[in-house]
Structure formats: structure tokens, C-alpha cells
Length: 237
Image 1 (tube, rainbow, N blue to C red):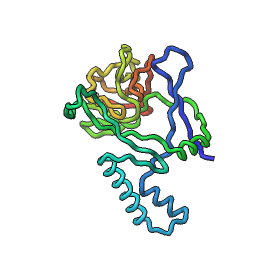
Image 2: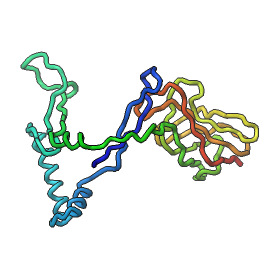
Image 3: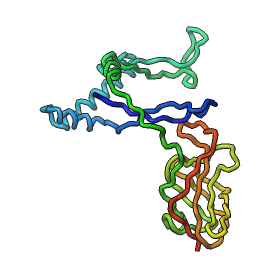
Image 4: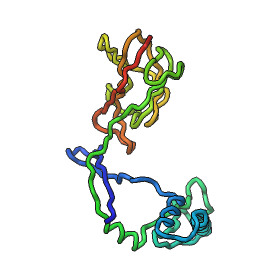
């Protein structure tokens, strides 16, 4: 039996406790090359290059016919076009800023039946906390070790984007000797997978890097801050 796995995420727009929504945990991504390999494994007598050529031509012809105003029905999906925008009169022209052609599709009957037969399994709660994977001093190119006060530090990982109104949101360096938590006030690059921060003046010593945020991958803010610490100490000479 086919199986689809789900991960649960907190519903950030709900005030109810234990309110979650689910997302599919994808096994991977399949391309035409992968499909060709699968067809050969099933016993197809065609060469891989021939199968890829057929699949590529098939994709191109479908796209061209859709662009000419055709509907397309396949064993997988049914494709059709729709128009976005409002028209005041029959004589109105097309305004590209308001009127847009959109592609829509729906699953075929056979696809719906196959999905209905799939077993659905909930894996549990998804990890929504930020994670630091690598830290690079862009001045010295030192990775995961030395940092330079007053220079740019690159932090790479997952779910790192600094967002939220809570006063604790931000990037911090914890002085391991004095236990003082120093906030990095200048964030010059702010993306989910990469932060660029301008380091403040720091005394020589050992530091722990911390990130606090209310960012969620669904672009909504979570109600409370989540945090992470880098697993390696950082040093200022």
C-alpha cells in the first residue's frame, strides 16, 4: 500500500491549545530523468535517452497547447485556463496589470482514487525551532571558531530569519566568563537560511552564539519566541 507521511505544525493564528495543521513530508522530487529510470526498471525496452526525449516533448506540447487556449486532460491531471481581473464593458481591452491568465488544474478521477487508497501516517510534531549549522567570519574566513569584533559574521542554518515584536528577538553573544548576554544590534542580512550581522565591540574570550525569533516557515509569526544556540564556542582573540 502507498503511504503518505504528515508532520504537524502549530496553528499560529489560533488561540486554542493543541491546534495544529499538517503538511506532507515529501520523500523527494521526481524529474523526467527519474521517471525514465523507473520505466526502465519496470522493464521498458526503450533507451533512457529516448524516454527522456519523449517525456520532454510531451511536456513541451502540453505547454504550447495550453498557451494556444486548449484544455488538456491526462491520466494524471486536467489543466485549464482562467482569467483574473474585472472588465467594465465588452469593448474593454486587456490591461496586463489587472488582467492575467492563470493556469489551473485538478486531479483526474484515477489520481483521486489512487490517493484515496494511500495510507496516511502522522509522524508527529515538526521541528519549528531555528538551527545554526555554520558560522563564518567574513573578514578572516574562519569557520566555527574565531570572530572579529566590528566585522560581519555570517550565520547559516534553518529557520533563522529574525522576526517578531518580542523584545528578546535578535542575535546574541553570551560571554562565557562574565555570563553577559550581548545583543548584536545591526542585522544587515535577514533570510531564513542565512543571517549577516555586524558584530559589536567584544572583549577577548569565549562566546556562545544565540538566535531568538518568532519566525515561522509559513510566513506567520508564532506567539512565543523560539531560540537556538550554536553547538561550538566562538572566540575573540
